[in-house]
Image (cartoon, rainbow, N blue to C red; front, side, top):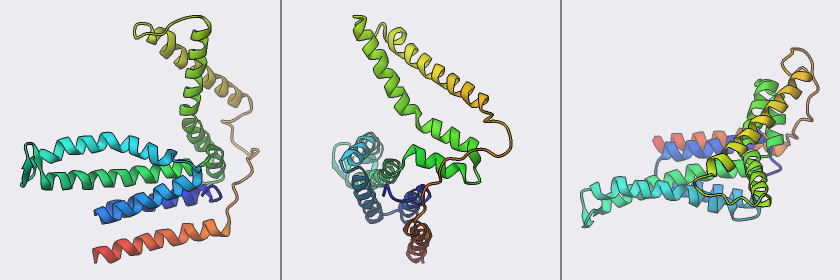
Length: 230
């Protein structure tokens, strides 16, 4: 999936969401989840997409169990009903399918490719920068946290719950704000906000396969939804 255009990856993930929500049955949810996990695993060549999906779905599954399992019509155990368990499992499977589509798409996309795609689209260079900067927040935050942790270790400071705010949280936030300010000053210096022609990044390659998939998959998804509803 790394060879696909970002618009194609986003389109495929969106079609997965549409199929999951429109069909709204366990078979469709399971099918979409399996396909998304397979694509994500193929893109990353490891089990990170599967593990992340399970980690995000576990709290949702627990909440579905607490909310729905005790309140069905067919009790099987104290505070457990068979139809409540079925409903909780169905909703959990649907949530898992939605998360699998999102995480697989994020695993297959590169931030640089998203910025290149958006800068030549109708969204423009400003939206491309905002989206790219937003997607980089988590990696930059993780890097800032590692730097602060190493600085505390070198200074011989033991971080506890009492000094977490002063020794970890505030330094990390300050580092991120400083980096954002420096980027803003650099952008202002090169005339980022000014109108007119500007140098663009090399566009992302849009192969024939990507264009065909971007056209065919929405049509197939729409046909499946219509056929199911009819």
